[in-house]
Image (tube, rainbow over all chains, first blue to last red; front, side, top):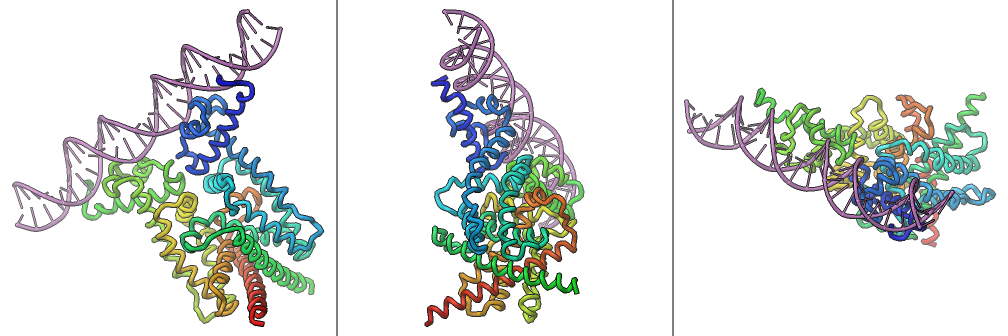
Length: 221
Length: 221
DNA sequence: GCGCATATAAAACGAACGTTTGACTTTTCG
DNA sequence: CGAAAAGTCAAACGTTCGTTTTATATGCGC
């Protein structure tokens, strides 16, 4: 062993980070243990020693990536006494910035996208620990806008309409840069985009609220 | 050759369909030529004979899949003299039905999603031949709602807000079924969903139109 | 019928990969 | 200190896969 004590589980850590990058870049199958170990300055056998096999390394890497990115969840909690529109804007801008901000280690989102295309058991865990809390936060904001008595189904449909607008810029980016080749995404563009999605969503929410209210009145009469 | 003349290029066709399924299920790397040929009742060498190598087979399969699914494009062209709201609903319902309708050969969309996660040269072709025409159609509908003089940038942002809501149910489905486990998607649910997205979008468009009009008036004064 | 291009089949090649092995080094602890 | 445990390393094993090769069968013009 080269140094020990300090490094004894640091190899494990380096493997996790390297694995995150490589799995995100190449996907599970195309990623090779040899490549991961090369980037982590570790031996080929290190993976099997620390994690058992390639699959268990993948699962650990996804959980690790999500644990790292989970810090941002608190970042988008916004003063709950602010105006609904401002809270919505904060939510949208925070989520957009999560994958559109430059410089960021982009592989967290890529790993997530791959889990989406080819779900494993880890996805359920992410759904419970990562997505549901954010959904609840967004649902609160939506209810503040369309009325606290709105049924769950309606609120969730609205939440999906909002999140869909945001995530579109994540999932469909490769297509976007091919359809709009000369559009650049700097910080001010991201802010303008968040502003657009906020306005569009507020408009959508108000219309949904109106037609929903009308329907309940019809039913009541 | 077993029969000839008739079958001479039918092997090629069978290879394309089998390749589409397998590539969609497993991804490029994890899919094996042996598996594809087994499903197509063809020899292992058939791929290299008809397509050159695995990559060229993949490119051909993606183009083939997109050519098959392109028939639906005409299906969502809607009488241009109808009301904007009805045209928008047709557009949304048509696109939603494209991947939410039950029974359909689901691998067209999956292949597309994989191209998105790991773009190859074929994606540019799909962008030009498949996406841009639809974008133009949607842009027309949007301009009919928010005003024909709206700048391209604004129209395109609105188009992305609408398409984002739709495609969310495609890209994020694995997550959706984990967050909302007991939600079923039958034909009537798809129709209700299309109705929701239409209402939400009309509300969004009108609000965007208002704030845009206000901004131009400010600039004019 | 004979050459020739076309299509399929069986077998094998060579490289890359995940995993295992066994030896070696360092840490831990009684 | 000294033996067991933990960690690392180079080398090799067995498998799988894409591709190539070689051979065989069929349709077509002359």
